[in-house]
Image 1: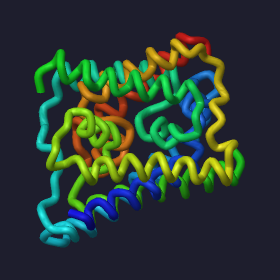
Image 2: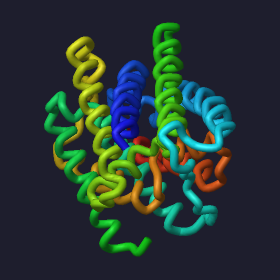
Image 3: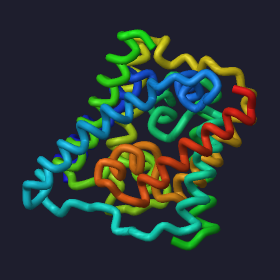
Length: 137
Length: 137
């Protein structure tokens, strides 16, 4: 259990480093990717880099019978494509296009203290709670 | 895009992929920030410690990087505070509905060639692009 905590903390550090280095903690860069009229492909490269490394890393990790700290590999079991997925993704995209933030970069930016980020993170958690209460899992 | 932007985007993306790999290898979990954060508020006690550790790492790592490179956290776009409140609600609710965000679906799910994730990611992007276009960039 304690090893899991240490690993998760270090992973959080590396993840935030990746977000900051890639420029994804700047909403301006997200908006530039989502702006079809003045398109900047930088975010596509970030995703390409991440997917490439994780594709390889995941396959290597799955050669093991278990994670290093024991237990099992836990992948989401859902397979169905439903209205909930579509509606959720569209909503997410709207929020992303308005604010230029998604959960990772927002949390990584939280301690910097910008009021935009604090407000975003607060209402993001509110939105998550609201969904949990209003929509059955 | 200049070569520095390209290399930073790829390097940052690779770090994100590395972080996700380490979380999977170490704990067997998928690095979907919205799911990890959502688990925190819904008080899944047995799960709590590593989730909190990840988020603390994310916040701490971001702040540490800010001390070195504050420009990495410049917002750079002009939106009123209430727009961030709206954006956060949409991102929070939307990611909860879709059971994932740009890291969970966009990086991990895409790497697994999950149909749900491929669709969700495409919809995030299209919806985001339409939103930015509607807002006038």
